[in-house]
Length: 249
Image 1 (cartoon, rainbow, N blue to C red):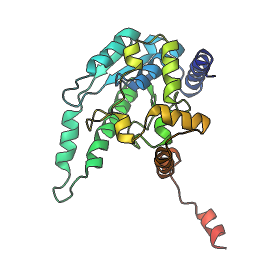
Image 2: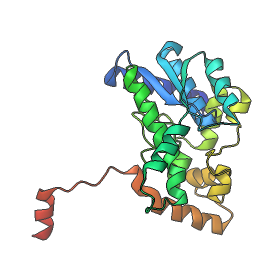
Image 3: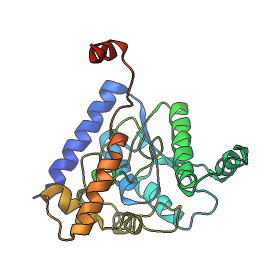
C-alpha cells in the first residue's frame, strides 16, 4: 500500500519548503555513511535543492573498511564532500578524561557519533548550511540512535518512514542497489544493527505499521525498548516556576 513515488515527491516538496522558511539559499549538510539512510536523505536533498546545494561529510575513525560505499554515493550524486578523520578527536577526548573515571563500553560507543555530529555542525556552520538528520522511524521507535549524535539535526526527512519505506524511496530515487541493501551496522562494535537489537527491521516495521508480530518475546523486547527510549524523542524538560506553583497549590 506504500506509494513510494507519492511520498518521495511530498518529501522533496517538504524539504524545499523547510529551506524557504529556514534558510533560503542555504545548503543541506549531512554525514555520509554509505548506508541507505544517508544515501536516501542526500538524494532527496539533491532533488529538492540541486546538487550544488548539498554537502556530504565523510567521517572515518581511522581506517573504515566500507568507506568505498560513501564515495560511491557522493560520486553517484555528484555532490561536494569533505573527508574528516575523527580518530584523533576521539582518542584525544578519551585521553583527556581523568583516569580515575573509567569510561563504560556504551560511553565509548556513543562518543564517535557525538563527535561526528559536532563535525557535521562545524562544516555546516562554515558553509552556510542546515544539518540533515538521517534517522528513520524504525530506529527512533526503539531508540537505536545516539542522543546529540546521529539523533541531532535541523530537519529530518525520514523521521516518519520505516526501514522498508526508506528502501522503497531509495529505489524510486534511482540509487544503486548496493547502497539501499547495505547491511546496517554502527561500525563501532563489530555487529549489525539487527544483531544489536535482537530482532529484524522487517519484524519491527510490520509491528509499527500493522501491529502484528509473530514472536512474542520480540514483541516484549520492542515494547520495552520503545518505552525506555521515548525520552530521546521529546524536548528537554524545563523547569517552569509558574507551573510548579500551581502543582503545589
